[in-house]
Length: 193
Image (spheres, rainbow, N blue to C red):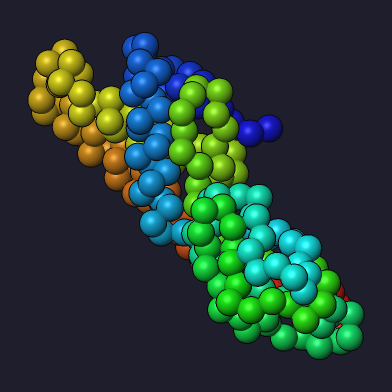
């Protein structure tokens, strides 16, 4: 089951034994997500029905980071394993090609996507639940960096706890980066040999 920001907040509150502001939790999780998004590429895929009259097609997602591969279903049905070599642009929720397709077909698009931006405590994390500590360690570190925490604990104690949790966050980030690098091959083979 996907973890929500409320779940992450509960984990952080249990650790720091203090109540946390919802907006702080949302901001911390967005910051952690932005950091990891620079290090990993999350693969995704979609299909589009194309025809010989249009050059612009609506895409169902606005979180495309970059397209890694496109191919036509008709090529695969004929036993041809080749990428579609076409000039295109992503603009205004559409993919716009410079030329029309020769016939009606199904275009398969493999792409890397952005992680979502959190806006509410009910939002779920994009990464696997096993990586929830990426968010919680970052949030706990940020908690210890709050002026109220520094004033209550003393600067040295708060700094030591901040460093401990931020270091943990960076180690988890590195593990996730390596994991996604190993899983995210630039090309996949569709079907069998």
